[in-house]
Image (cartoon, rainbow, N blue to C red; front, side, top):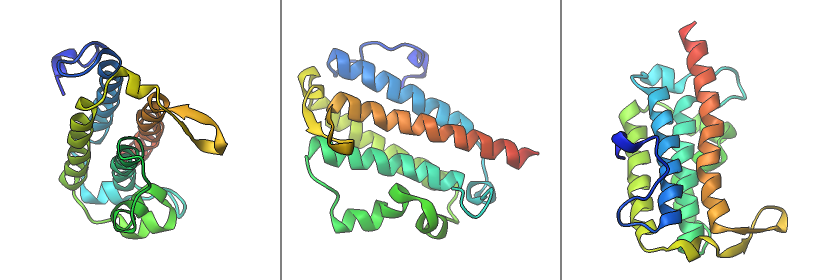
Length: 174
């Protein structure tokens, strides 16, 4: 992520114009997420506001899981395998399974997962062009959607849940 150009939605060398802009927005969303979780401890990452809430750690892993799932769905045009669901399922679904399974990891664990998935996203997007973004597929509620929308949803979901992260972090501090 080029921090000198984090506030520019612009061309990125090696990517087509629309993919560059999409990646610019995805990068900014991630930048603000990373700023929100700086220096959090394991205890803070595992904290639950109540018995139905998600922890910050679970939300971070959810971001990686959603991005991975969209890589598979859009670039490989398939659903996650049972093996992939065993790795990512709790983070995709969150809820009780996420609360029970996603615990005890330090911040580097989550940052590494986010970075691994993002690195793969960059590599996959090098293989696509702007016309790829226009490909349509049946999506939620049997409605047509294109890959552009689907990838917009990846960072829109992160932005939405980042609001939860900020609220939880404020509660932790007082």
